Amino acid sequence: MSQTPPPSGRPLPFKTKLGYGLGNLSVMTAKQAPKQLALPIYNVALGVNPGAVGTLLALGRVWDAVTDPLVGYWSDKTVTRWGRRKPFILAGAISTSVFFAAMWMFPRGLAAAQYLGWFAAASFLFYLALGFFSVPWYAMGYELADSYDERTKLMAFPSALGPVGQILVGWLYWFTQRNMFADTVEGVRWVGMGAGAILLLFGLAPVLLVKERPLPPAPAPPPPTAAQGKQKPKTSFIAGVKAAMDNGPFMRLTAAFTLIVVGTSMVGGLGFYVHVYYLFGGDTKAASALVGWHTTLWLVCSMCMTPLMAWLSVRFGKKEIFIAGLAWGVLRMAALWFLLVPAHPWLVLANAVLAGVDNAAIFMLCHAMIADVCDLDELHNGTRREGLFGALYGWFFKTGIALSFAVSGYVLAWIGFNRDLGGAQPPGTLLLMKACYCGIPALMFLAALAVFARYPISRRVADDIRARLAAGKQREG
Image (cartoon, rainbow, N blue to C red):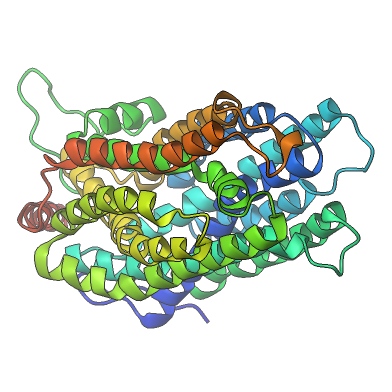
């Protein structure tokens, strides 16, 4: 039986937080798995040009970014006996699992163009389904808690549980290389079906364990001027998009997060090649184990650091800890240069430990701050738009990811990577590979730090916004 959220200002029940947090296991698995497997399978195993694969990954995220705001707006306006978000989450969880498995069910013996066509069709359907699941799921979280610190505590659950899905993703390629499978193609088919089942299982948790908070009555809008006369709050899709673009804190937060995601995504696929060719000289089996352990250690550390980051944000504020996380990211990427040593490849696991700090702080606090931004929008415009704001937030960073995916495949070509050379890549290629892997994210962390430094919503400002909203609702009551 699901639980009803408590009245305003009271802590959410543990079951509600757990049910919502488990949904992130599916979200993170679905977001990370395609880019983790696409190049190793379609480029290394099937011989498809890496630039073409990267372009398809990019186009999939562009498609995702276009459809997400419409899904968010639709879910904001939907009223059913099961809630606004749950029907979308249920349909999205089922279809996401099916289309993820379909991406790896290609027939054998196809030409490169045919493999690309298969991947394009399956991935476009997959990303559409993922939007139906993830956008309403994010919006549900923005609505559940209504106090500054309780939002951070709620978001600690998906931040701690989501890495479990990412750990799984880190081992997917390793599973495809097991001797129980005849080859990589057979391995990825079974792995795809298994991961699809996990997407469905945990995608149903928010549906079964969480009851949505009823839509609150709209607050009294600011008194109109004589020139304006009596006006109703504008709730159309275009009005919502315009309100988001005019919301300075939302744009600063979104821009900072987009820069981080672009920097890490641009070299995310490159990480596979760094491990295989720079550290292990082309040995895919040995490198797949290191990739798995690196991902596992990074995310376990992130899970362990999440309660500390939540406590620190309650103690010092979300903005302050977010800035500290960005600064830590810059220093970590600089240190990574000295941890990539072919003679001692496992030394790179130290980077995984360090990455847990900025990952826990940044990804948890972004979503906690989106909820604060939605309060500001409600105060100024008299309506709640969590779904649309969450989707627009996703639109920006997904568009950035799309561009980074498009570039990443060509980065491999630019640095001179040649699949046919195996472990005998030229020294200059390996050096450029390392430089891009460390340098691009460091620059993006610095840019994000510059953008976010003037984010204006502190604890005091957020509390003032909530008090003014509450006063408006009392006047309406």
